[in-house]
Length: 165
Ligand SMILES: [Zn+2]
Image 1 (tube, rainbow, N blue to C red):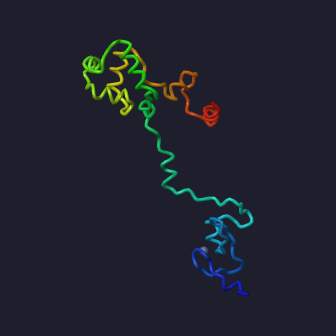
Image 2: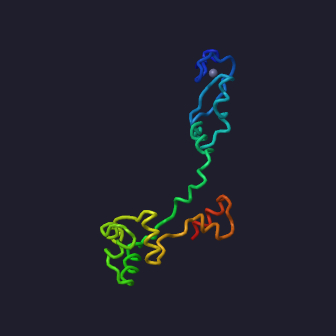
């Protein structure tokens, strides 16, 4: 049995006069002096799930606003774009070379796109869409939300609704 006066704060090492404060930090019980008690939770309020202290750096990152045009880059090319291009081209009786000439791109590039080895870049995609009168993009989530009548920020309820589908 140790005497009370022998106890030292497990945080700062100071001698503890009287009863030590028992606190919980990351699931461990520490005996500390009164001035260090604020670093943890009192033992009797300990909950079985230890709460991690959020690093300061991370909470800063969370508060950082997202770039406004973040969603504009999220134009998604449809998954079967290769077939759509090929079918449209063949229905117009165009060879790869013909189409390549019309939109001033290389036939080898178009072949790769039709095989879906390559996702067409925006300018190529737009030329293909115009030339073949097709649509190769999907609406982004933001556009879908807007068409529902709200341009507001996503709420937890919105996210739950999206997951239900
Ligand atoms: Zn202390």
